[in-house]
Image (cartoon, rainbow over all chains, first blue to last red; front, side, top):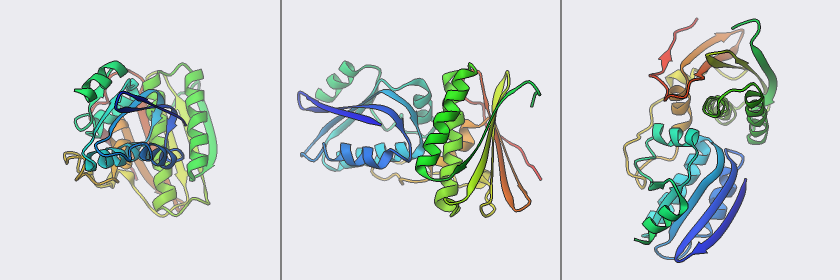
Length: 112
Length: 152
């Protein structure tokens, strides 16, 4: 899995590409977790390039959300492909995450 | 299964790297057969979850499982045969889905996804092997309530 990060305003934007499965999830959680060490972090993960997510991948995202929430920060996902969105729906994570159709919309929501 | 249906078959270890390689090949096969992205994703996901569970809890990371995928006009059917201890994925506990992120347990989602994404899910124990068979509808609607068939 390819992971690219950038800072837009006070939001850390992570662009992921590829498969988020049991082979990639630990490295993903470690890499992204290292980007949110500041107090009250704002984290946006752009899933536009993620075409396969397993429960191991969902657990990695959930770990990151817990870390962000514990630090008093906020979290959002954007540009989730439809099959992945269905998996989020089924597991009840759609209701727990702030999910946006586009990156700009997500950044605005985190800034607000 | 139709005699004309396209078929993929492989053996795999239940390790993360081997499972990734297998599901990558399955998705490429399904794409080549014209299967829609949703059905291809969910077929690969169900295979991944069953094999990951086998490697993690079945202590079978070093034993090969046989995986078959068949493309039919209305569905994709998958089958996993393994030498692990008896395990019926239909009997897995349902995770607590309504808790807040801070309270939510990390585990339990994999086999729940197997049950929810599969249109049919069958299990049999034969010749000291687990045989798990599932199907994924090729239409693009959300899955209907999973039908769990008994099997001997």
